[in-house]
Length: 154
Image: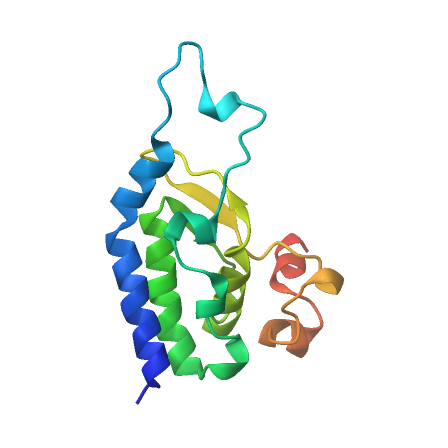
């Protein structure tokens, strides 16, 4: 049985996913000006994922507080939210649900550049082994002293 705060988090993720069309329309609403291109404007910095989805990072517990089963359930909803907002997180096959959750949670404070009616790929596990912030949790890294990224390039 899942903890109540996990159930509430899943409900919240489902709710923000249902509001994605409304939130994206606000993001893409651009003042009508002649010769104004939002995507080529050098001052356009994108938007933080937390601002886009309307849910702050502190709502998501640290991965240490989750069981493997809880992480798996949350990751499915988390990825659905990213997809609903036009973001496609890409992970290596060897990455566990716990690692995915950690990366998705970490990505909440990153700037993204959604494109209207398109999916934008976001590389989620692209670290050199010595710089990977998740290496303590990565079973592949611990077992073989190489992370997924290095093994893929080998």
